[in-house]
Length: 78
Image 1 (spheres, rainbow, N blue to C red):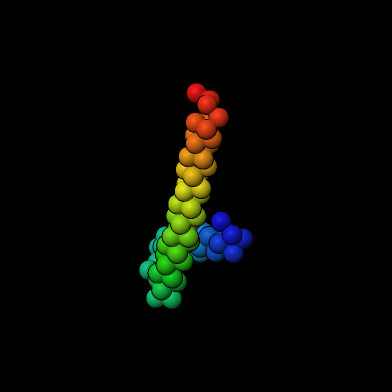
Image 2: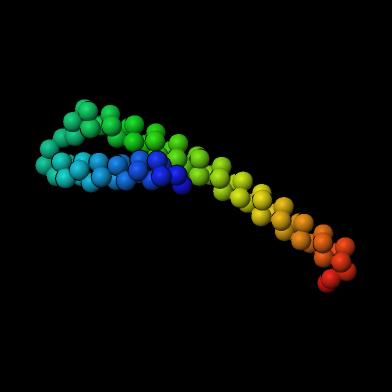
């Protein structure tokens, strides 16, 4: 996760805490509701990026495992 993504998540968390306090007795403002929609879009984008990163790391791990297994066969190690 990049520093920018971490800052985005921290900002969203802070805004969600603020929205939670407002919802105690009053309706959520239109601006706050719109910001919540943008926050959700930002979080989905970050999740997509992280999913791609996990997929890439999984592929690299699987490739390294396959290379290691091949080297064992070539070296005659059981």
